[in-house]
Image: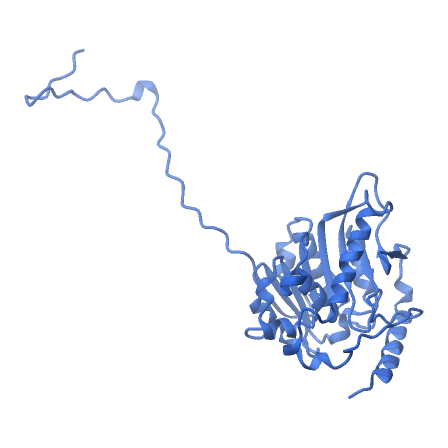
Length: 328
């Protein structure tokens, strides 16, 4: 097994290379600031007067960082979202200090032993960030937190699924949709808690992801255990790092499905075609929308004929005698 110190160095080198190779695509919309005591990267288009933008919050992977998936955050910002990505305690961005949790490296091999205490600090980070946004003068009139989407990669996927109801004690109200990118969902799958999800979910995975994330679409996997509406998109030749700056080949497809999903369930736009059609580079696509309530057909309404076509009154029977014609 890799020792924590060596793994930390390798991860730092990996992130550094990824950040350097993606630098050319950085747009002016990216800013760093401190919110709720957290270092946070923020992306957005210039705010229009009196227009509050829907919000995306991104949770990075274990030993990743806030800007590890810059291409996707930029895509959300270009689509009109205000995007916030905090550095969690285990972040390894260049120039940032890292504080590894006590159970680093070992717990991923024993998902059945996980509880809602594992990496709870990440869920607390998201809560602190949202609380800070609500009272910050820079954002109060420019964000609409009633339209909130959560996005997470790897351990960040675990984080946002937990907040969406996979850990009952973490469940946070006000979430509109959750996008889990090659998530570490094994603790939820083994303990069968994904039925607690209370928001629409999209899982994204890759058929070259050989880490412990591929169980999403297998029988009784994360997708099957989740309530609808739900989606699963598997990208061809995509590894676990496809959702980071270091990945290649399917960035456009990852962004297209992710933005379409959030548009549909955070903003209420019609995106049925985009969400149910396999694009180039997609190896598998599954989806299940809520079953609409079947309504009984309404009874037919008989047309009333014009007055001159109304039939004459029926004869009136008096007693038990013969039927008498009505008097003219």
